[in-house]
Image (cartoon, rainbow, N blue to C red; front, side, top):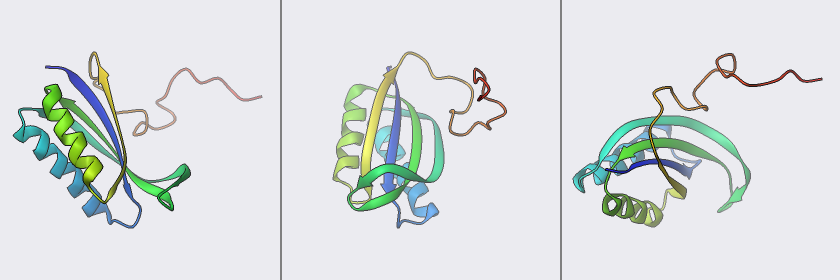
Length: 117
C-alpha cells in the first residue's frame, strides 16, 4: 500500500486532550477504511506565519499512514468538513524514516547546520 504523511492544524482554543482525540478519531476513520496508522506525533500549539480563520496559533499534529488512496481521500474529506480542523496537508512518500520528525528532535541532534557569523 502507498505511504503517506499528514500534517493537520486544529483550532487554538481546543485543549490538548481534544486535539489528541482528533488524531485518534481520524486514525480510526482511516483504519475502518482499510488503512493503517504507522505513527502519530502531537507537536503542540505553535504560532503560525499568518492568521487562518482569525487564529494566530494552532495545534499541530503529524500522522504517518500506510493506506489505500480511497481511505486517505475519505479521511481528508472528513477533516475538511470538521469545524475544529483548519488546514490539512497530505504528502505521498516512498518510505517512512525510523527517527522522529524534525519537529520532535532536539536542536543538538540535528545535523548539517553551520555556525552563524
